[in-house]
Length: 259
Picture 1 (cartoon, rainbow, N blue to C red):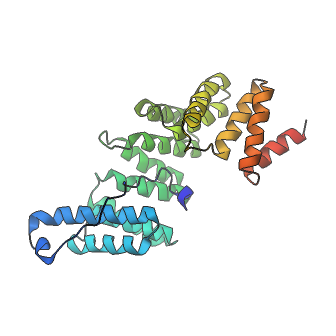
Picture 2 (picture 1 turned 60 degrees about the vertical axis):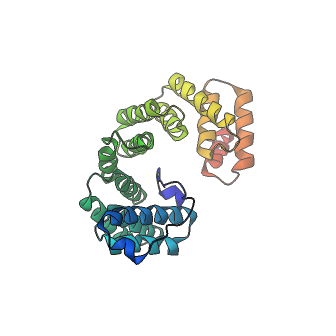
């Protein structure tokens, strides 16, 4: 399910629970904060996989404000997880209608649309989200926009979107991978190798990050193009050891079987 949520931008876990009393909800000035707290907790519980508690907190927010964009978008996530696409889309659309400036909700909706294969609609949502220059995860928005652009055949736009993502955050590994793949698709191997090296350096520098099968396969293709047999062999061994049943390893075996 996590792979369906393209660039899913969940909030950081809160340190404790929000405690409220009935008197709090009688004071108008506290209602907006209570809604915000419930939404944050709902998203945190969603990230943890505790969907029952997440639902309870989103519903509490909606009890206070039935048009809360954050709570409606949160419910959309839960419906998506529970394989209720119609209900999920209704919730996402209600969230955006309630507050067109709620960028995080657009990113959730865009990820949902990508998972449904509706790439043009996905592109439209992430295009709107990218216009919000104050959004803290704008680099990831451009990364997802690039992925959508590729799916609808806008290869050059995809390259530019990935470059914009890196202009905002040079350590955005998904953007580096996306740009490398987009450049390979355009047979621009020299450029692709430069970004591929940046990506590999970042992965190597962080012991908590493991290269994906996709990243390894891309690196293998680049090494092969530049006749770097030692590097190709090292990467192929890593791909086999980490992802022996992956589609990428199957592609590599098919490639070398024709030699």
